[in-house]
Amino acid sequence: MQTIFEAANHIAQEIERTRQHLANLEQALEGLRPLITLDAATTALPYTATTRTQHIEDVSFVHAQVSADEIIKPKRVTKTKPRKRAKPAKLPSTGTELWLSCLARKKLSLGELVDEALKKLDLDETARDVITNRAGAWLYAAINKGVLIPAGTRDGHKLYKRVPSKGN
Image (tube, rainbow, N blue to C red; front, side, top):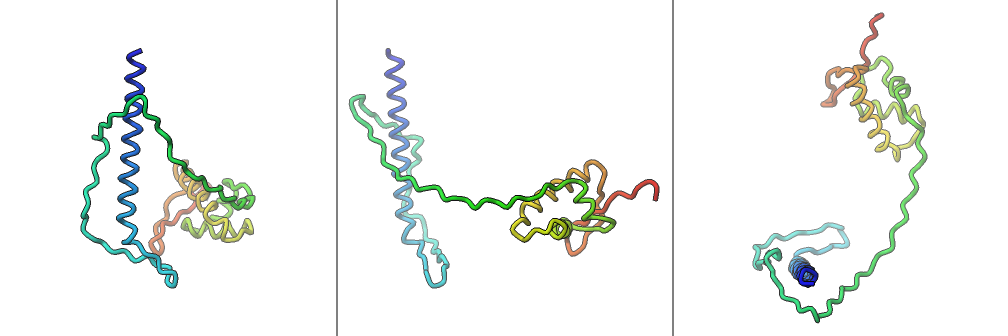
């Protein structure tokens, strides 16, 4: 029975430490609010740095004594409704054939390869991030498999080309 009481006491101490930490965070936030202003006309956030005037106690050292009779009521938190995400457009599958056809016999950078793929797949700019991720993953795998080799740089971007076939 003693261990259950000790466990309950430990949990109560942890809850009190968490409350103290939350109070310290809220206090720090209130101290920062005057420093952050929103100018609606420019939508800029001016920031003013000031010297730190208040010390916030490290709550990991707070040892609160809570009696077993004390009722601890949790703070109410209002939940916001989750926003509906726009459904992403169905993108066609991309495989080695697509990437190799985009590359052809040219030396291309990742960005140029993505541009070619967007043209071939007849996709707009909303698909660029997904296609870029796919192209980057394929480039990495193709270089490791020996299908592609680095072919220098152009305008600061790495270029890649197909490994020449042994018949040429």
